[in-house]
Image: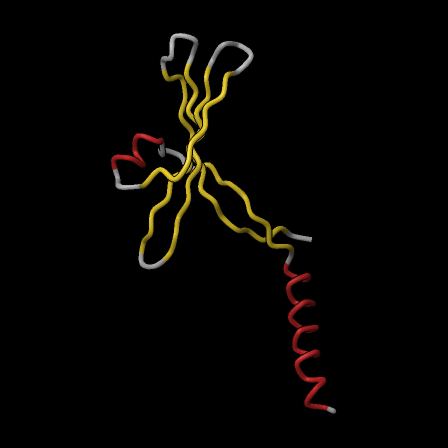
Length: 103
């Protein structure tokens, strides 16, 4: 009977410790100095992209990039904005991460 309770007690303790530390959530963190051009130049691979028209006539391209380093996958999302003449006006990239939010 006691042996059956041990796994349940361990799970309960782990759940309590996780809630005391906060909640895990996925997020995007902007990375200064990164652009879709810098990712392409450094060997990242485009895994998906989409374009959309903005109400002011500008265009936005959202692209997702990945690379594998030492068995881990890194993912970046870039949003590139073009004006009505399709001149690039901005390019911001963010890294996918998992963070702990405080209770």
